[in-house]
Image 1 (cartoon, rainbow, N blue to C red):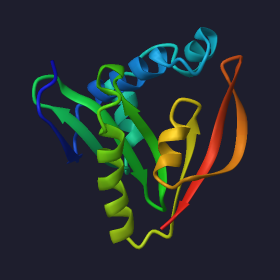
Image 2 (cartoon, helix red, strand yellow; image 1 turned 60 degrees about the vertical axis):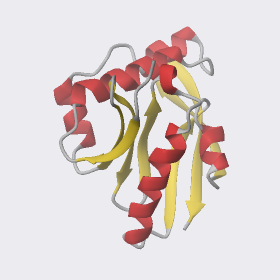
Image 3 (tube, rainbow, N blue to C red; image 1 turned 90 degrees about the vertical axis):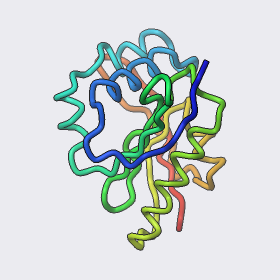
Image 4 (cartoon, rainbow, N blue to C red; image 1 turned 45 degrees about the vertical axis):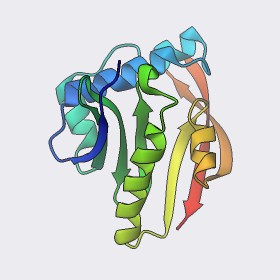
Length: 156
C-alpha cells in the first residue's frame, strides 16, 4: 500500500535510494532482454557513484510518505533530462507526469528553449505523451550488448 506522494526538489537526496530506483527499474523493464538489462545496469551503483553522476543536476524526487523515494527525474543545465525512473511498484500512477511537470516549470523559468533526452524503449512513450518528438532512433553499445533508444526533443 502506497502512502501520499509528494514531488520535492532534492538538494541532497538519498543517493543510495536513487541508485536502487534506477537498478530496480532497469532490471524490471520488459522492453529489454535480460542480457540487455544486465549490460545497462549489472549492479546497483553506490551512493557515492550516484552523487558524483548527479552532481550539478536539478533533482526532482517523488517521495512516498510510507516508502520514501519511489521515482526521480533530473535536469542538466541547458535542458537535458538525464534520469527519469519510477519504481515498478509505483508505475502507472502518474508519477512521471508529476515529476515532469515540476522539471518543465524549472526549465521554462530558466528560459530553456528546448528539452532533450535519450529515452529508453520503456520510457519513450511517456516522453512522447509530454510532447517530445523522436529526433533519431539510436543503438548504443553497452558492456557487450546493443541497446536501442531514441534521441528525443521538445521545444518550449
